[in-house]
Length: 236
Image 1 (cartoon, rainbow, N blue to C red):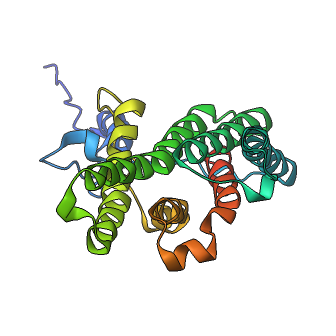
Image 2 (cartoon, rainbow, N blue to C red):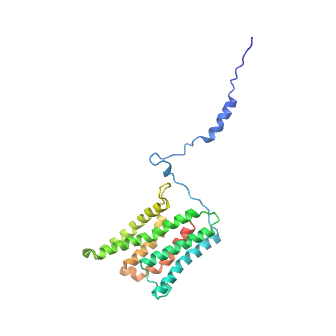
Image 3 (cartoon, one colour):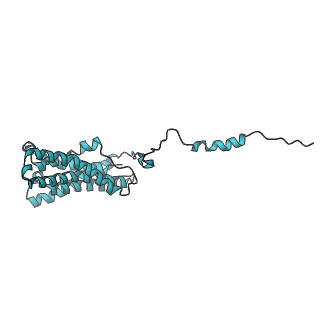
């Protein structure tokens, strides 16, 4: 009689099966039901700029700020520190500082994180220009409306131009950066609101309020625009 011995040892099989345990979905991983994978936030890289990289970005943003100011100083026949900042000057100097910061950041950043710097530059540009544009449009409407020519409406225009303009700028910049909506939008944060004091000062300068006008907020604008350029240039 021939006896057949049945192998009941599943060790080999278990070993093969256990190989795939590492690919099992973690219980900590959660995909939102309402928005799919698009709602998952992706952490940005945390490469810290070195001394020379930061210095390059600072030089670029300052140069990008000063060069347009020199041009406008010649046009206005005025000293560079006595410029009259209108809407055209604000947009040009702001754009120059951001372009200078981003260009210097791309040249000096060893991590080659160029796309993020360009995207942040676009975001900062719209954030620095849209609120004054919105305010200027509201002011023109106010000037053509007889019953609206008062300080209360001017204050309202300032608030709407500043807050509404910042949110509109964020929306427009996200459409430019990601037109097909493939990644999460760049949101306004408290840090953006604090740094974007240039918008407030710019709008107040255009509003020409008696108290604000005496403080000459336009004197501070170049430094803040240079800071915006630095922010964009060192962005990761």
